[in-house]
Each structure stands twice: as C-alpha cells, then as structure tokens.
Amino acid sequence: MSSTHIDSNANTAGSPELGLTMTQILRNPLAALRASMESLAGDFRADDPRSKQLRGALDQVLKMSRDVDALVQLTAPRPLAPLVCSIDEVLYSALRALRFEQSARVKLANEAVGATIDADGPLLADCLRRLIDNALANLDEWLLLSARVEGREARFSIVEGVDDGSYRGHSFREMPPHRSAALELGLALARRDLARMGGSLQVTHTQLGNTCVTVRVPLRPSSSEPPAR
Image 1 (cartoon, one colour):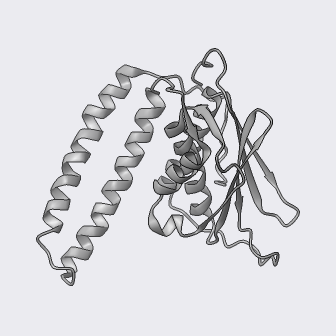
Image 2 (tube, rainbow, N blue to C red; image 1 turned 60 degrees about the horizontal axis):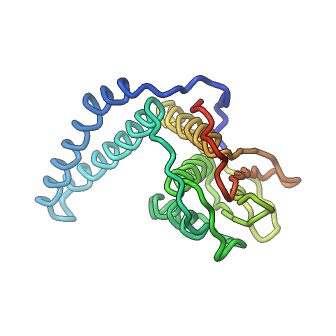
C-alpha cells in the first residue's frame, strides 16, 4: 500500500455546499474539456504524432476528473443505499472500474460464489477499486483479490505480489507527489466509506513480506448508519 500515512480518525466530515462549489468550478469544466478533446481526437489518424500527444493529454484530463470526483465525495458523501446484491457483482464491478492494464494484473479467487450481501454494493466496489489501484501503483507485480463469507461478514483480501511460492522480492515504483496525494485521498475515502457501512480495514504482512489488506463488511446492515468521518 502507499507509504503515505493515512489517519483513519482524520476529520473528513461532509460539506454539501463545498461539494457543489467544487462541482461547478472543476468537474463541469473538466467534463466539457474532455468532450472537446475526444471530438478533436477523432479528426486525427492513428499514425498522426499529434494523435498520440492528444491521447496523452486526454489521459491526464481523465485522471484529473477522477481526482475531482474523489474530492467531491470527500466533502459531500452521498447517503448509503443498501440493496441485496451478490458478492460476485461487487467483485466484478470493482474490476470493471480498473483500466485494462490494471485488471490484467489482478487474479481473482472467489470462495463466496452465490452468496449475497445487503450493502451499498456500488460504494463497496468503489472502495475495493481504490485499494487495488493503490496497491498496483506501488508495485510492478500482480495481486490476488479474494472473497469469502465468515459468519455474518464478507471478507475481501488484497494480497500484493503473491506468485507460485517463489518469492523474488518487490519492485517498488517512484511516484510524483501529485499521484501519491491522489492515492492517499483514495485510501482515506475507502477507510471512511467502509466505516460508514459498518466495515473495517486491516493491513498485515505475510512471512514472505507480502502486504495483505483485509476488508470485512457485515452481510446485513446495522439499524443505523454511523456518522461520516
């Protein structure tokens, strides 16, 4: 996971007014810029050098849009919307939200096939996606994403760098400050939203030095939603 420390007790209380302001100032103009760039990209042939440059700039705009969305969610979290869904749906929703080069590095082991969970499925999938994104950004290796039911809880595990039993050591990436800040924001959101669902997040290390992130979420919601934090 990211080496940047995340304070799970940090005050991230929502502010709808600030969220609306950020949407008006940042999200809407970025969406318009993205649409214009996508339209312009269609005017260039694939072998045109300008097409490659434009695609690179468009990729940066898409990343900025995701970061702005994360900031809006931090300042103005939407109410929870529990619904009965399958754990399979949660897992595949998390994987579908990743870029292709990311999802290709994730191996899935689902021991909860057919099991259901009464939770905010899209929000839970987004939390898992953020945790996977963070782990993939730090290592040039693949991950194991697993799920199982334990008593009244669903347990999701993300294990970095697991292979065929032969440990070859980790290859860590150097990231620019803005990317580290974006990952830190994603971790803070995941911690907060899991807590809102009555869940928990724990980071441990295996004997081989692999990082294991364990997420536990009740199969059925509690009677009331904990305050956002």
